[in-house]
Length: 112
Ligand code: FES
Image (cartoon, rainbow, N blue to C red; front, side):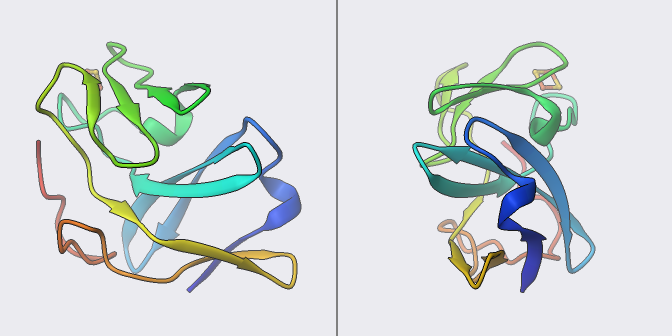
């Protein structure tokens, strides 16, 4: 599903896009785009509006920190969010597959 123009997500930027009724956070690190469930499993903060430092994405609410490559939390350990495969083609970003935990864009959040 086409979600955003590539130019709208420069290096080091994040964004929130809507995929089949579900908010998905995008982040570009070292040229590559990553897609995660936007909803923080702590109290629902918007991860796509968080602070991206390298591959670390900090929730804007209470600074839980997730690895954009895997959805795994650096802090607190053991927490995670679903992540989705993405591709870029013809100047646009596409969310192309279900999350690695089986979550499908549009499904209910999976929780922590
Ligand atoms: S809502 Fe994300 S850290 Fe609290």
